[in-house]
Amino acid sequence: MEQLPFGIDFGGTGIKGAPVDLGQGEFAAERERIRTPSPSTPEAVAEVFVELLGHFPDSRGAVGVTVPGVVRHGVVHSAANIDRAWIGTDADRLFTEATGRDVHVVNDADAAGLAEARYGAAKGRRGLVIVTTLGTGIGSALVHDGVLVPNSELGHLEIDGHDAESRAANSVREREGLSMQDWAGRLTRYYSTLEMLFSPDLIVVGGGVSKQSAEFLPLIDIETEIVPATLRNKAGVVGAALYATENLDG
Ligand code: BGC
Image (cartoon, rainbow, N blue to C red; front, top):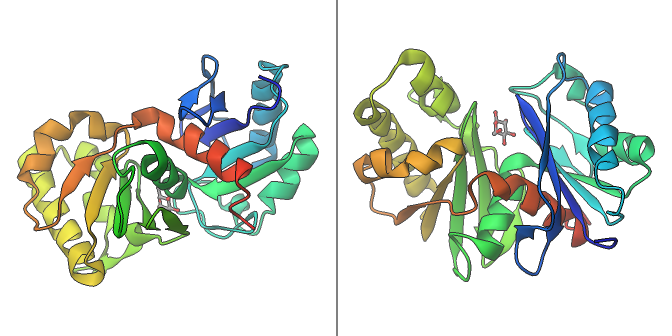
């Protein structure tokens, strides 16, 4: 387990982590979960990472961390659904100093996109794949011939005068009590805009709600092939570990 990379999925309610077997795209040990501190400032989150890594004393490899915001070369540049203190934080440096490990942060949807392209629903697919995550917000990853174009932020497209995620995220479905039929109508508007702008070869739908995909994916009326993610709640941890190991932040 010593050289295995470690993946951490930092979300609004939980911080989850496990060592990852990159040959299989699987957890190499049972995952641990710790509640996200409130407020979830970078320093408070760094303390949780130290605690989390302490559960796996045998793991010594690089550490990948997902962040639900724009990340460029280790620095967080946006915070739509997290504490604003993240903006401008050099998270690679903060976490590397706090944990004593080689830490690399990556946008959460980009991590999911990498994992789905390598091991999941988009494995072996050529051309342009758009992986979206439907959760509190909408995350997106653009993957072309297996190569990620980071920080696409397509959840914030302005559609009909609205920030797209404020109409079509899963949290909005829950908050407004939308039926699957009504939500699928909003998702059709959203995905047909992606279709018009990017002409993708495949759209992958991730996020926790993807396990209910049978209830809403067939109701989304677009031309492009659209499929559920297959890594489900493993995608963030596995994708982050992959990102850290392959030094995809350059
Ligand atoms: C953020 C993205 C993130 C997505 C999913 C959006 O509000 O801007 O960076 O990937 O939510 O968490």
